[in-house]
Image (cartoon, rainbow, N blue to C red; front, side, top):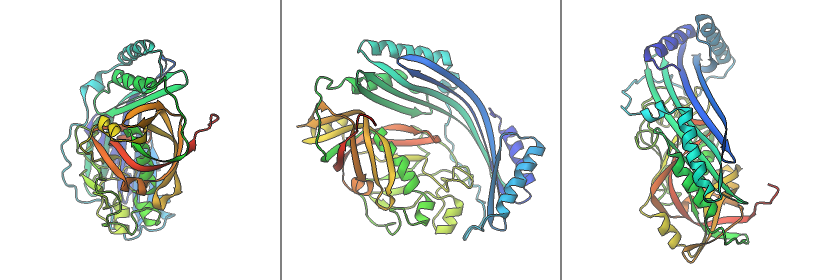
Length: 450
């Protein structure tokens, strides 16, 4: 892993010198370890150290990108030629005014912590064994993963921009299984996550109301969504609604609605990498300093997440959300959903007839992107709420729901929020409260063969 700022900038400067054009470059380096477990047995421990450089060049207003994992002069020259060749075969970017030149100071944030740096695979194995032992007392066994990583990110461009940061990441994913029932818990943090606490939470979801199992006819119900369920929806919104590309092609529900009240007044989503209790990070990979950007503010769409190229093309201000040079064109990798003043217990007590959902599975967000119509199933803990209490466990249920409609019908939010990761996002995640939504459309139950 490249932990030396001087070494990182030496490699980046060599790549920019080989570009022989306006250019920027990113160098990502990671030392990561993941411990996977099933049936309450640790069955895989994998460690990997890797580094990759991505170089982007601008030739006659067109963009070309190439990557390499070898950093000697000959390979950097070859990578630069590949990027130039790609640019020569690309169309000029519309209204593009060039790469970022501001070089404003990035915020000073604490992005790495000693507890992640110092944990060993043996330490993680001991913590998992303690969790397994506690689970056996409840007749529960566990599956999941416990991951830690120390990484560095450096970026630079031919206009003098230079950024470097080290950052830690820890993630726990726990599924508790008891017979045919299961429960789920997850968390991400710059600190070391408490895997034992996640085991306790998953165990509760696997054993809650285990003596009371009911079925349910399709219909429209109030729903209480835990943060993992909401985070799954946000992953899709980051593809079909929040990006400059989806705005440009007309498929995002932001089109024609920026500045207009579309969702509930209690729906606010920001891209916020400045909150040090979440997943802080000081800059995006184009070198722009991170700031708190309102994506949706009190139900009003404000801006898609746009990199410099799409900001120029669409007439928005860059949102410092460029995480892939020439790739995703901007994405909210630090999505923070504002909380309310309720507790989980109050949400349950206020529900006459509803469904409490731990997480979603098999989600398809491409049914109708303009209204963010999605379908999926519930998983690992679905509960019937009747007269303000948990009355029974339910099978996994299928649903089909417009998220524009759902987020216009948010009834209440908890003050407590949970950070949830995503497989593609090494920088951040989603910070979400528990959410109560009126009128969620359940269409059936998941078949046993699914």
